[in-house]
Image 1 (cartoon, rainbow, N blue to C red):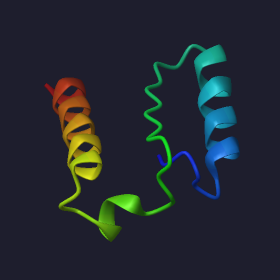
Image 2: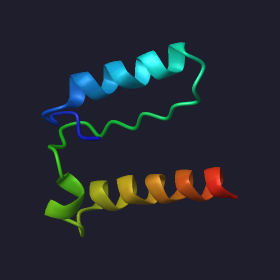
Image 3: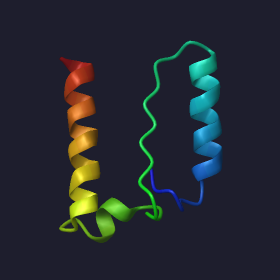
Amino acid sequence: MGEIDLFHDEDAQYARRLREAGVDVTLDVVPGAPHGFKSLAPDVPVVQDAVRRARDWLAATTA
């Protein structure tokens, strides 16, 4: 999620409530990034890094 995403605060609160309820949550916030940043500039290193982290997380949770 981007740090300046329109729903940042709500998403962070939701993750916190899930954690408090015992759900394993990973919240990855990219500093300075807006909503939809991954599709805006796919060749930018910060975007590629965020996508790599998401893929690594997904691979680890589905293995």
